[in-house]
Image 1 (tube, rainbow, N blue to C red):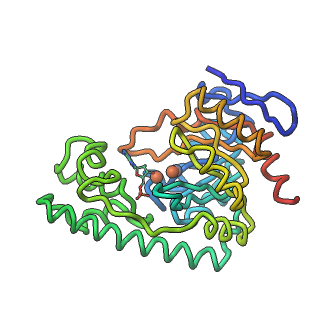
Image 2 (cartoon, rainbow, N blue to C red):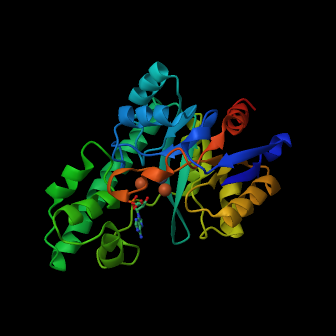
Length: 297
Ligand code: AMP
Ligand code: FE
Ligand code: FE
Ligand code: ZN
């Protein structure tokens, strides 16, 4: 089913395609994950799949990591797909863990790279604390099996869920969150607490634009105005967790606050079973061009 998302800033109506691959030419997916965080595909495999789906542009937005971008850019060039540099950061807003997407960053910016190394180290320490908590409640998970899942990627709860599943300690991926590692669960541990203002500073100094990722049902207007005051550039309007009503709601806020809009599948692959999302949650290239033009203002 095709849904109308007006491109607001140009006054021209464009369409968000949620109907799958055949009409994905001239379209972009700006939210994907690779083996450099909690995704199942390497940058090469991801770009090859994007090519198969006929996408014009993709952004790789690994959590706390930009290490997959050079490979992706190179493969993108050879297959005729534009790779937009990206990154997903977690910030603390009140008592919530909110995700931000950065686009068009200089992924070689040394300050950015240093911070990302620090965030990944903090993730590793947090995974160790989670494993200790699990062991204390007689769930015999080892850190080695978590690290095996993570490979070169920044360690996250999805790796812990996969490790629990592979060790036969749970029956489904979601059980990991329901029983143990979800917010408030017996083995839950917070991530390093980054403020939105610090995250925006980091993204801006690396030349990028900041977007609120998948606000879903959980971001109210007060929280949004706090983010805007601190330097938010846009909102991810198209995302699998947004139904038509939420898309319209966030599109309305984008227009009201003169923000940019973005969208993507948040594709991870593997045990997350979200293969159907890739190439389905896309935005037209016109919207990417509007984002790009903001870089020069
Ligand atoms: P982390 O960045 O390590 O806190 O991991 C966050 C990721 O875990 C999210 O991006 C989701 O992919 C996944 N996640 C968080 N909560 C749940 C949940 N309740 N059920 C399934 N996956 C979840
Ligand atoms: Fe993820
Ligand atoms: Fe996210
Ligand atoms: Zn994501």
